[in-house]
Length: 166
Length: 166
DNA sequence: TGTGGACCCATGTTATCCCATGACTTCCCA
DNA sequence: TGGGAAGTCATGGGATAACATGGGTCCACA
Image (cartoon, rainbow over all chains, first blue to last red; front, side, top):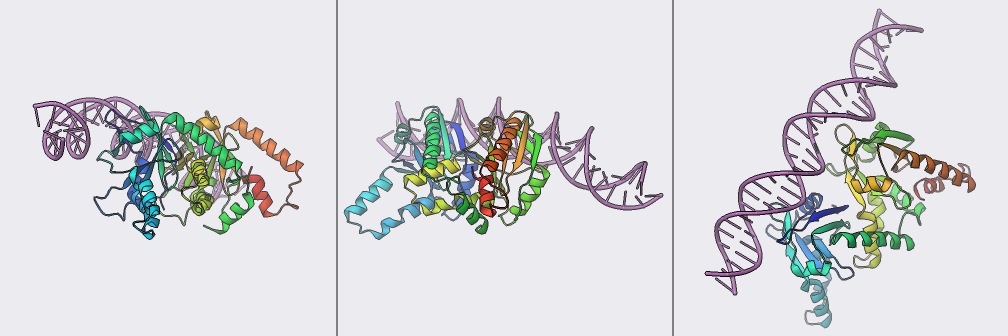
């Protein structure tokens, strides 16, 4: 399993292009290895809970959409879910230099200007305006700690499990 | 199981490189033996509780991240935890000389200058500014004594907790 | 024919690889 | 038991490749 790790800052040029950070490109190449050639390896999506862009490797996005198959095509549920999933989603493919073009609506939603930040979230990554990203990371640290989602709150089990497990 | 023991001091050069202490390299080689080739054997992470860098062998890091798999990809918990866990984490790989480059943001967080201290914590290790490391060790000794955390009373789990947890 | 997008080439900067050196430790043999 | 001799280790610096970024050109579509 490949992962998106770390935070990287790149520039958004006048044409709306950004270089995808090299480590993310590498992870993407591995994740998309099974995909058919020609298919867009990346899906950009408007994030619902934050002012940022979500970037999904094709494989992950398809897994996300899988539950749709089980719904009646003409049901309201299907309609709602499908529009939520697909309506604000854009397939993109890095060019030869490793850059992608960010759609205007997504740039607006994330409030992007000159510099953009790529934030690794494991299976996916997000694209943020730098200062908003900084705030978000601080907030996430705080909330994760408050809810006991870190090592600190459950050291024993996690560590013992870590040893026995992988 | 291999362990990181002891405290070592090395120099951080102008390029942001440090030699990983030889004993730690050896422990790392053993710990990463089962990992896939090409994958970074070490993940550097911004420590949340202290002004230092946490260094996780790949296997340990994956175990740390395992609880994430059980969370709904769209839940806020997942979002917070993934951000806290991955956004401040950087995969690194020692070069032929056994050196790693420390990312700028992590250098800043730990307040590193010319000399850095590697502190063994058993399953993981930490990277500190020398004086901060000294203070931290004194504090840890004091707190451990105050709580009566001795070898006798505290079997494996408690010791691990005392070291790696807070 | 004008406009926008995709493709291509060019360049400065940064990071990565590779070799060299000095201090120190360990080992071996006289 | 002393005195090399060989290896390990940390560290410095230069060469090379990767990367991010800017700008130009061609084609499609309106």
